[in-house]
Amino acid sequence: MKTFSKEELAQFNGQNGQPAYVAVDGTVYDVSGKAAWQGGKHHGNLAGRDLTDVLWKKSPHKDSVLTGLPVVGKLAE
Image (cartoon, rainbow, N blue to C red; front, side):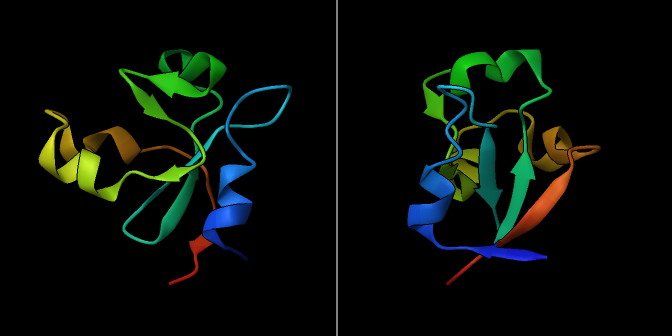
C-alpha cells in the first residue's frame, strides 16, 4: 500500500486527467468515481487534501460517505 506525503496527495486533485484522492484519518481514498467529485471539487472541498476535519466537523454524512470507496494508500504523518 502506497504512503502519500501531503505534497504527493496534492497531485491527485481530480484536474487535468488526474484521479481525485482525499485523505481521512490517515487513509487515502479514491473519489474519482463519484459524480459529486467531478473536477476534484465537492461543496467547496478540494481533492488532493486531508479532509479529516471537514468530514468530522462539517459533513452531515460523517464517515458513511467512505463506504465502498477504493482505498489507495495511507497518508504519511
